[in-house]
Image 1 (cartoon, rainbow, N blue to C red):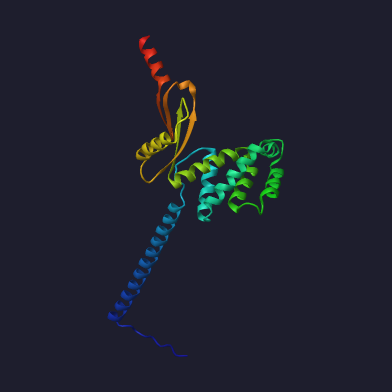
Image 2 (cartoon, rainbow, N blue to C red):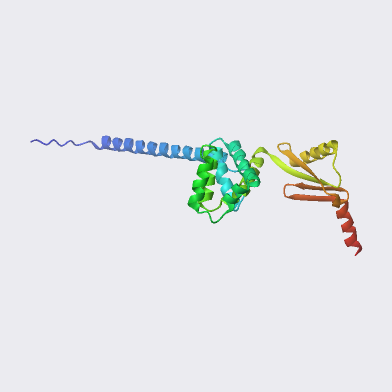
Amino acid sequence: FFYYIFIIPSPILWKFKQQIKSMFVQLFRNTVGSSRCALARTMSTEAAHRPPLDLHGLHARYANAAYVAASKGSMLDTVENELAAIKLTATKSPAFKSFLDNPLISRDDKEKGVEEMFKGKVSNVTLNLMMTLAGNARLSEAPKIADTFSQLMKAKRGEVEATIISADPLTKAQVTAIEAAMKNQVGKDKSVILSAKVDPSILGGLQVQIGDQFLDLSVGSKIDSISRTAV
């Protein structure tokens, strides 16, 4: 056997090494660039499905998870309607409410009951939520979780709930004027969902509740204020 030894001249070897180095540098840059683009797309996608309100607590934890899942599945409105229907059923049906609330029913039996009642009748998001609540012995919280989900949806639509309390029923013109004034306060990108209540005990004037803000312009509160000052 003959062995041939090839001696590569130093300049050629150096050039070869430089080419290899350049290839690895380019490969590294392409990999890092692709990773950064993928990360940016992932972050953008996550932000698009993030709940519009920063809510905390038990009900918010389940509602937030359902919101994200429904948003990714493009079924937010569907899930909102389904949860509202579940809450309404719990209000009108003593048997259904008892099923939700009864701690003597085992978790396994509740999961089976939920599957029998809802599978094929609601979206997978709502079914998974109810199954999770059953498995965690939290079915009794379903109506409040529905309320929290509704709160998230109203925030997404830019809806602001407001309540006007008056001593006497307001006319349609008065309600319209109040609604317009509130619209100016909350901003053009939001819509006011106004409800009116009558409470003769305030004697006159108005009490206004917008979100978590309360404004008391009633005659009753003024009388109380004058009375406290006099004392």
